[in-house]
Amino acid sequence: MISRRDMLRTAGLTGLGLAVAACGRGFGGGGGSESASGKITLNMVWWGDAFRAQKTQAALDLFMKANPGIAIKTEYQDSGPYKDKLATRFAAGNPPDLMMMRMDSLREYADRKSLLNLNDHPGTVNTSNLSEAAANLSKVGDAVYGIPSGLNAIGYIVNKTITDQYGVTLPDGNTWTWEDLAKFAKEVTDKSGKKVYGTLVDPATLANLVVYVSQQGEDLFTADGRFGVSEATLTKWFQMFEDMRKEGGLPPAGFVETIGSSPDQSYIAKGSVASQIIPSNGLLGYNKVSGGNLVLLGIPGEATAKRRGTNIGTPALWSIAATSKHPKEALQLLNFLINDVEANKAMGTTRGVPASTVVADAIKPTLEKDDQVATDYLIGLQKQTLVAVPPYPKGASGIQDELTAVAPEVEHGRLTPAEAAKKVIEAATKALSQ
Image 1 (cartoon, helix red, strand yellow):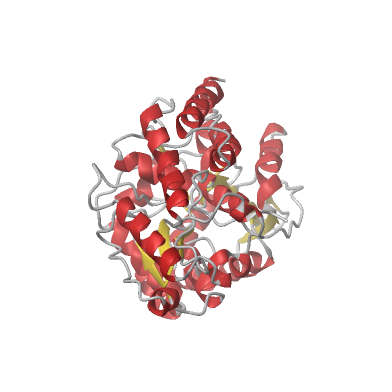
Image 2 (tube, rainbow, N blue to C red; image 1 turned 135 degrees about the vertical axis):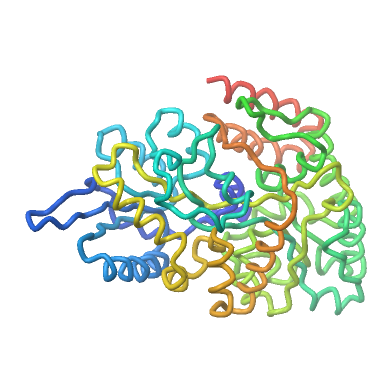
């Protein structure tokens, strides 16, 4: 069983993408080809489950109907082995034409010149309806190596049924601070007699840490790929949650190790916590299993911090191999996936809110209410001034590994927040220097 902590970490490292259940269907591949009849076949790969495959295929059917000279051979894989299997395809000189590119792999592939730079093909993919935040996600230096397959951001959900039951005022999600969160969480725990803990936040989740360090005026990674977080900020990060735990607002040590990963297994679904951070495109799933009265708030500290911390993320880019035999057709398909309204209606929000703001607006009425709320949240964020997160450098996964290792040690009192901070910085420096 994957723990709740594992699931949240996966979401963080992959840029807020929800981990998708395994339904691998092979990855043997074969790049694009041309049949004797002259019909071009593109090879397209992604990670996900059968539901995502079904939704994606519906969009591809629309493309192939409109472009009878192009066929698409699709393959999808579990999220876990996808990274290694894609690397194997490239190493064998047999990359797919179009693929989902993990954000923590982007810089590595870009540095190797393995991906098509869209700037070398002007006019082929319409990016005029992408916000600056969305467009920046695929940039490495001045080059553009794909388009976000969907957009996401973390948000804070609060179960209003619980707060109403215990007479706790719902925080103002636009103005609340981390101190307000601590007070709110303690009040829920106290008024419920510890039947419900006020909140659940995993300090080991990189997506959460990214927001906090930006609010402190620091960057997780510098532009030249070094770790940019100070020991003081990391110490404050761990200390904040230990203080909340001691006050009772956060569950006691060991609490998060005892449950599975899906929304229906979560503590908020079980009613034992009143609030937590989730990827915004998870609102529908969490609300369905939590009684239907969740409220989506912004992340604490945004209004009073040195600068904004919340940022727009994507589970992955749609990228094209630099050695694709059919770049023209692959670009044509990419443009279709990003800008065709009917295609995005078919795909829904399985990869997050469409990157095109025009498309996102157009499909919103077709979505369920909670997905509409999540879409509005993303559209609203893109109208604000956000701090861009540079592409994760090679070795970044080592930072997540160290956070995963030290957070429980702090939680159980075996490391102080300062000692944990020092360990994370040492591990990050080593990982990024290799």
